[in-house]
Image (cartoon, rainbow over all chains, first blue to last red; front, top):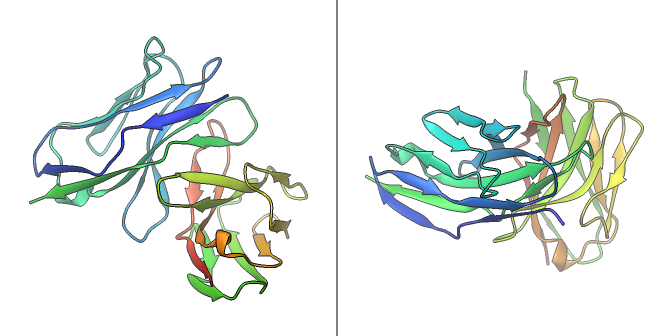
Length: 112
Length: 112
């Protein structure tokens, strides 16, 4: 069945460090892929998305490329800030059944 | 434009008590969802409503019922609360393809 696997957290980095959060998926066909972010005490909000192979989603300095050959959608940012501290969720949607399949989330902690 | 609103923000119930979680959206979205979020497990879909007048079970529907009251409102009812239902509950709505979902701030429920 469809599934999403994310790297376990927490991930702790210093400000201005390079960030990678790994996400791999299992799905038949060509799912759409998403990264959502949850700031402390808030609901989730869409960070970026990609709908087909080799697409790159980007937003707020974050990027992720849809890699069909490695079934991955890793999240990257060149220089993180304290305000990026949050929980990041990778998710996939396949077909029109209205359901997103979620990873477990990765907590990111940025220290000044 | 408030987006997705949820009430209450916090609730403590005793085992066996019932309650209804309320959700409303003002974005004229057709689809609405209820999720629960537990530590280390990401989000799990409880029920969803693809359009007004329809509801369908998600991954973990047991112990819950839903009502799509109108296009704006989608409520989640716990008829007889159990400690296993202690969780954070999120409502979301969406429109269009791919299904970007907009989340409410969540309800933190504790069942003792």
